Structures are given as structure tokens and as C-alpha cells.
Length: 117
Image (cartoon, rainbow, N blue to C red; front, side, top):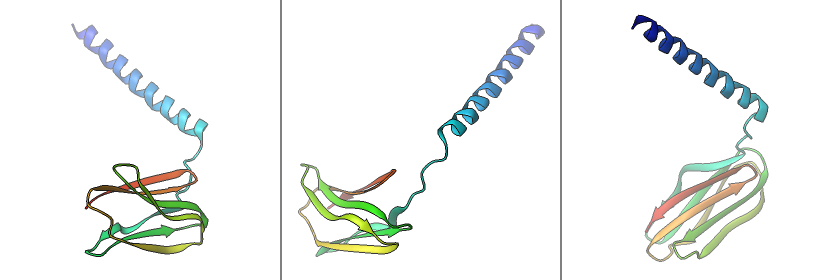
């Protein structure tokens, strides 16, 4: 019985070492993840009685797209194109009630925020 326990323990340790080695090798083969050049600022989307305010922080100038999409697929484009570094904000009149999603895309990065109005 003791031999079986030692065999299982050595097998488990060998498996852990192999998995860690394989993941380390894979991370070097793929390279480093792309740097996030743009992301949401603060609360990202602030809902008021009259408007919807969207804020984005740009770390490095890049082409970005910011839009609002409702459950039926209606798209409201807030910005599409290059932006300089800094904090940028857009304000639109409050859309109709329902489920909305704010989408932010740039090269190598995509982010979404769900909004219930």
C-alpha cells in the first residue's frame, strides 16, 4: 500500500512540474500581451436623468471606436478614429429604456460595459 501512495505522489508531482513547464514555454512562445493603450475612465458610463456620459482614458495615441448598442442592435457611434493621449468624454441624450451596451475597441483590446436604463 505504501508503494502505491509513493507512486501516486511522484506521479502527481511530475504532472504539476510538466504543466508548469508547458505553460511557461507557451508564454515565451506567444510573446508578451499587447499593451492596453485605451481603457474606461472612472465609472466608464454615468447615467443621469437627461444624458448618458461616457469617459475613456487614452494612454497612447491610437485609433479607437466608442459606441452604444441596444438589445435590438441599434448602434450610436460616439467616436471612431484616432485620439490623442488623455481623458476624453462624450455625452448623449438619454436613450430609450432597455438594455444598452457601451463598446470600446482599439488594436489588441476590446471592452464592453452593460447599462440598464
